[in-house]
Amino acid sequence: MHTYNTYIHTYIHTYIHTYIHTYIHTYIHTYIHTYIHTYIQTYIHTYIHTYIHTYKHTYIHTYMHAYMHTCIHAYMHTCIHKHIHTYIHTYIHTYIHTYIHTYIHTYIHTYKHTYIHTYIHTYIHTYIHTYIHTYIHTYIHTYIHTYIHTYIHTYIHTYKHTTYIQTYIHIYIHTSIYTHMHALQTY
Image (cartoon, rainbow, N blue to C red; front, side):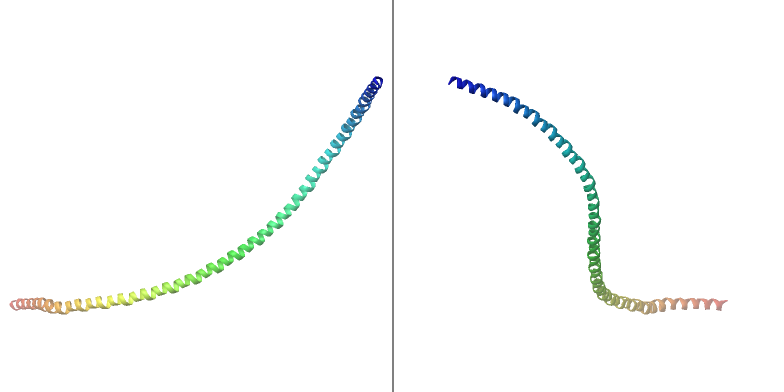
């Protein structure tokens, strides 16, 4: 049994150590590493890198940029222009025009005309007219007429004619003529 054990130990150890260490290890180090370092690195470095740098960058810079520049520009020009022409023009023509035409026009025609025709006309016709006809005419006819007729007329007719004219003028004329005549007669 001991021999068997030694055999297994020697054979297994030698075989496994030699085979695994030499062949597998060499295989792993040589083939796998070579594969990994050569193929994968070459693949990753050459193909993927070249693909990413050449194709992707070319794609991004040429196609995407051209696409972005052309398509987005076209979008901006078409959509924004349409937006400006449609929305703003619609806004200006519909809202502002409607506002100006409907509101301002209606405001001016309805409110202002109503104001002018109702308030001013009513004011002028009722207040001013009434004021002029009632107050001023009453004032002119009552006060001025009464003043002229009563005071001035009475003053002129009563005081002036009676008292001043008849008394003063008569006495003056009478005295003056009498004195003058008397002086002529004595001369």
